[in-house]
Length: 116
Image (tube, rainbow, N blue to C red; front, side):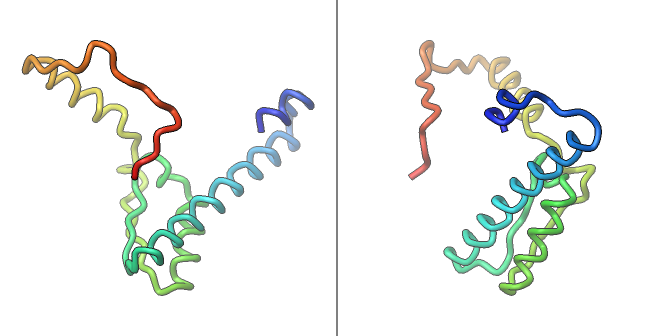
């Protein structure tokens, strides 16, 4: 997307709507496939789609559709409850700070870190 926009600029009107829809479809396709693949790999029959991304109606419908094909049940909270947990993390950090908890003065940040 970034390269496309750098090369062609930001479109307007219908081309912009088409670009946005294409991006949404690509993301929903990738995430829904990964959710179902993970459930199958772990031999799970139930998955929960949550967080801010779960408010996306296309992701919700595509995940349900693909999961149903594999007899996997998708549990979805109402969209109003699908929020980013940034606020929750901020509150948790504030409470930890008030209790006197402090992290490392030089935390290690690794954007390439992957859980094992």
